[in-house]
Image (cartoon, rainbow, N blue to C red):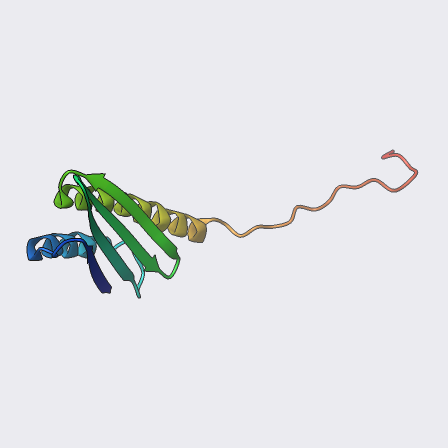
Length: 116
């Protein structure tokens, strides 16, 4: 699992990085390998913005959250990505459990005639 952090207009706090890594590691049980995670933290006036992008074999998961504190925004964004990962995993498992399609025999009547 590759995790990349980007800080825009701020210096990245090691505590924030550790908190993000812990929550992202918990996500790994729902995601297949290889996984690339891109976490962007921004400061805009009085808003703290966190964007999390997770690229995996089955597609890309993305969440963007705004909050007064980076840690709060990070937790909200990672909770959204967690929900997306759980739904994607459930869809994948359901697709595997679905029975194979079989074609039903066609019941047709001959042209110009009746069933009798």
